[in-house]
Amino acid sequence: MATAFVKEILPPSLTSASSQPPLFDGTTRLYTSYQCPFAQRVWITRNYKGLQDKIKLVAIDLGDRPSWYKENVYPENKVPSLEHNGKVVGESLDLIKYVDANFEGPSLFPNDPAKREFGEKLVSEVDSVTRELFSSLKGDAVQQTSSVFDSLENALGKFDDGPFFLGQFSWVDIAYIPFIERFHIVLAEVFKHDITEGRPKLRAWIEVYAAIVTSL
Image (tube, rainbow, N blue to C red; front, side, top):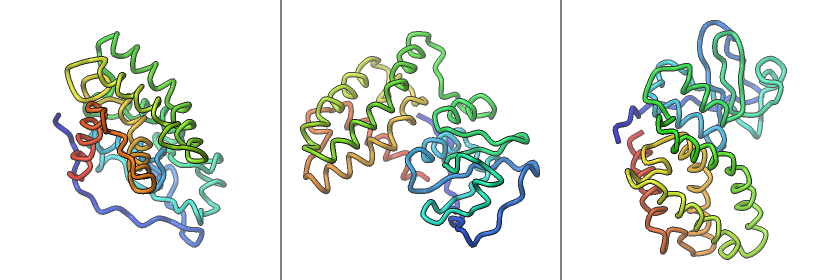
């Protein structure tokens, strides 16, 4: 899979002591957090489409947020949000679609109707999947997450033309990977459990994504 990832120097996170960047001066800005999986979705979208020079990163320190962010930029006071064409839009899944539709670069939505339908189904389930993963940490995480990862393994086998959910890299992968990647690490380090054991498609999916990230 060809990607448009390039290395870049990430700007420091802005805090309550930081001045607000100019607003609506014609610059497209992605307000983000380097630790937030929701924000990571749009960061991945931006980089995959090769928009590092078109969309400027503005990192926000979520533990010490500048007051101007809520007051002047995005009243929801969450990341990610995108400043573009005189408005600010938010919500990570909506922003994947927005960036894909409004900027150049490889499309994250397949033309095949069957793949598009399956992709919509998977994305409609992602919030319930992530809630289930987080709630599992209060109990037997290995047992409680087993069915989730089995379902992902099955979904990754739906199409046989690539290691991703829809064959080619798409918005579905972006919707899921920031969360699955984190739980892969947490379950390995805390519970000494490898979620990819016995799940070769899940293993390949995570490994291919990791290879993409190392090219940043």
